[in-house]
Image 1 (cartoon, rainbow, N blue to C red):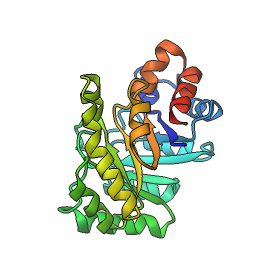
Image 2 (image 1 turned 135 degrees about the horizontal axis):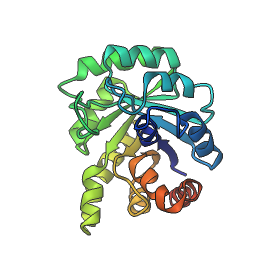
Image 3 (image 1 turned 30 degrees about the horizontal axis):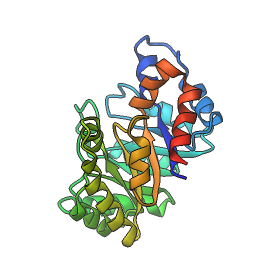
Image 4 (image 1 turned 60 degrees about the vertical axis):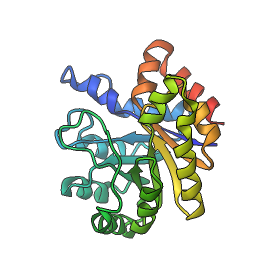
Amino acid sequence: MTKLSVNINKIATLRNSRGGDTPNLVQFAKDIQEFGAQGITIHPRPDERHIRYKDACDLKPIVYTEFNIEGNPIPKFVDMVLSIKPTQVTLVPDAVNAITSNAGWDTIKHNSFLTEIIQEFKRNNIRTSVFLNSELKQVEGAKATGTDRIELYTEDFAHQYSLGNLDAIKPYIECAELANSIGLGVNAGHDLSLENIKFFKDNIPNLLEVSIGHALISESLYLGIENVVNMYLHRLK
């Protein structure tokens, strides 16, 4: 079964909008795990506009599933990850002013930088994943950095799927097949939803984990968080 890691950034955004502690991020993470999710994902950004660095520390003792911290490996982020030692760190090249992640790494251009960062995390027994566009050369470049996994950036698939273009899955299949053949684990995330998750999962060989936040939280406003978590788990079986 593909694991479901729930990104709780949007819960932090809602909390921050009022300046208090409602909804409580820690309690929400506890509940999501109780409902069956196999992981919690957070993506702190330098301006802390949703997840705060303190949140990462507060979550560490209560995440008993897999704890995945995403972000651009600036020095502050690296120090935080090394201090917390989550299950996995996912490296994302997001710009400081980006609303959300909008591109994967150029693993060839940034080979030396990524290799150095990944080696440091692996020395500390933290599994590493690199956020990638669905390009075969970038998968090969990721292998050269020493990363454990890649995370396929799925926005284009999700958009094309909504238009009825099922062939949009093909480059993702090819990248997953290549990754499997060279010993890289495959994760995926961005704009995956109840509408497209089963098709994606059924077509991607050995998909280990999906990280879903915006769609899952939005769907939960209509259907309820416990119900939605279990709907995803059903589709990922």
